Length: 331
Image (cartoon, rainbow, N blue to C red):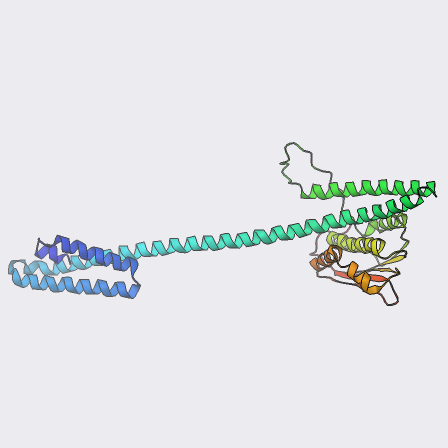
């Protein structure tokens, strides 16, 4: 190609055009196509140099050098074009990868937000629904006994007050857990964090239920041992929700709670002998509470079964496995 310049000084424009053509082919065409174009230009340049040498014998000695220089310039233009192409494709790949990563991060963020919302909803339901249900039952009893049994009314109001304080304390604990740890609340003091409830608090829970008018019998077999805190909390929440449902739906009844500790599993069983049609009870008890119980138990690879009992009443059974990887140990 540069032979155009060496042999005939009237051809610099053609040489520049051919260099641009080789560069463009290398930049925008595939490897095979660009190599074919480059080889064709080298062959054409060499042939033209040979023809020009015949026309100008005095320059015949310069033909080999012109052919070599032309070939090197053509290969250089091809190499620059391929380098620019590779850089462009690499940049495009990085941009595409960044877009895909951003989309994947968005999906993960949305999933994390949904999971966190579900966790918060479960915790708030467990805290609020239980206490409000007991307070509602106590308030109804106080209203009925208002003019007949002053002492019973006073006891019910005292229980409502105590349960309300307990609900507020647990709500503060939940808010404290959810509050940003860096204190971005414009000077607000973080809520005091209370320990999570667990199976060790069953006696207090049963006493609350008895105060609300539900006789509860608690039986515990085995020793807690190394039950992780998460499993301990999940088992407690299952019992709490089951007893709360008994108060709300079973009518006059009694309940039994049976906790059984195994070396790598906790079994929980809550039964009541409430009266009423089993199918109706089943329909009324399928809501956020039962869903929350299933989610809590499933989080640790456990199973939960709930349904009417033969002869009346309702039962909830949960099995929650655990090992050393499930978290900190129970208190």
